[in-house]
Image 1 (cartoon, rainbow, N blue to C red):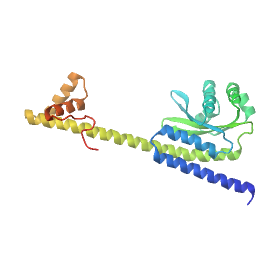
Image 2: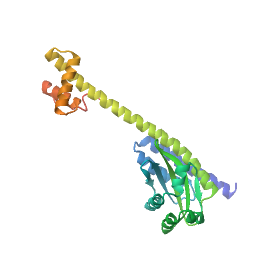
Image 3: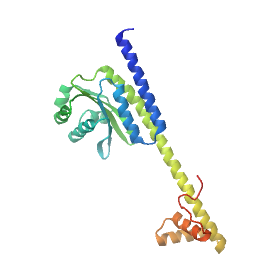
Image 4: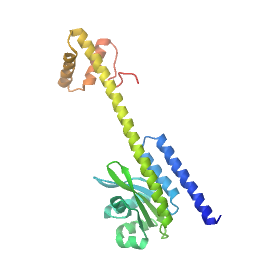
Length: 251
């Protein structure tokens, strides 16, 4: 086996390890921003020519960096946002990978390129990425020196971005499910204390469930206090035990 082939196989092993670590992070965190930071850290390992990385999100409020491996990467991103153009913004807007040589970058974006040059960066590679459900974005790579990114670098980034897009989509779906479960549990607890209050009123005043509920609603409106808080207070007053309105049912 040639040295070149051996080197490629060794790097593919590194790519595999990076993707496995990314998958492990998804299973161990519910912090989406932390996941994006891991994506940045791993892509520098995946793409040989990359020295720094960042992630841009582009939505109705504009463009911003949501993760970066280095403050310099975030600063260069800001220069692109100020110019309203650059590799990351083009990738996000067009849905195409953008690979630019330093001479071309200087012609297209003189202010952005000047800021990047001040930090020793002269090579740019960006791939589109669906960062959030409602917003496109991009993974941005920066290389020191004027070596430029190669075709193989672009292929590695495209492969990685494809996997990351799936990982982020699954993570967003899992986080939505977790939030729905939390909301359901809260609703169950809220309903529990309201039902207790209704039961006490029905027994004490010999009224129907609807009438008991209307009494609680009326008290809630008069005091401008949430219904489940009024109910918890009522139950506590009549039972002699303090009731937490947000934890009236067992987990």
